[in-house]
Image 1 (cartoon, one colour):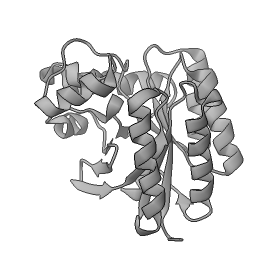
Image 2 (cartoon, one colour):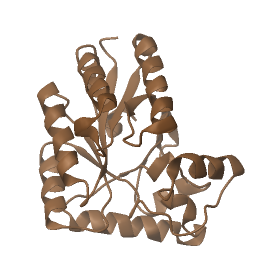
Image 3 (tube, rainbow, N blue to C red):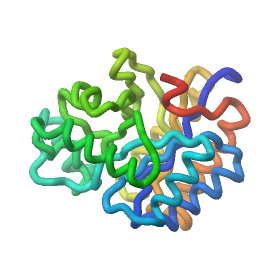
Length: 236
């Protein structure tokens, strides 16, 4: 599918993951995977994180707010199945499920303000673990955010339009969760010629020494010979 798109994302870019995040970005640059989507955790901020964010913004990357701290603030809220998924796979990272619903828009505004301090505005949001509570679309609109990124979708919450994507990537967590994502990635590669948008992602944790990350980079290389890289703003 020569007219298809591949969105290549780097997740969990933060003050504590800079070295591994730079390693991933360097490898993606070698593949010609531009533009990128860079998912930034803005708290705590740092001068080094600001340098990376500004550099990526200048190179045409879409900057996405990836939570504020990527840490749970308390017990998870929401439907039983969502809370079960958070307990099984998100550990202490299901931040958005633990924010008081009445504070959700303010929480997102705080994240955008921190991103602005780092040198980037953002109109895109991806919840840690792709775990968002009911009603998040209204909070996103109130906070000035337009695009909500899920594992299988990107939603324009202003136009109320959903674009389905097929995921492929590296989680950086190992174990059963990594195995599930690897299996999904294999399926995506198998059906990719029938899919308009593939969403390829890498997390920085352990990437430089991971065979799963290496397989994901090779899959991205193959995808880039078949389709054009794009941001979520473009495909939505």
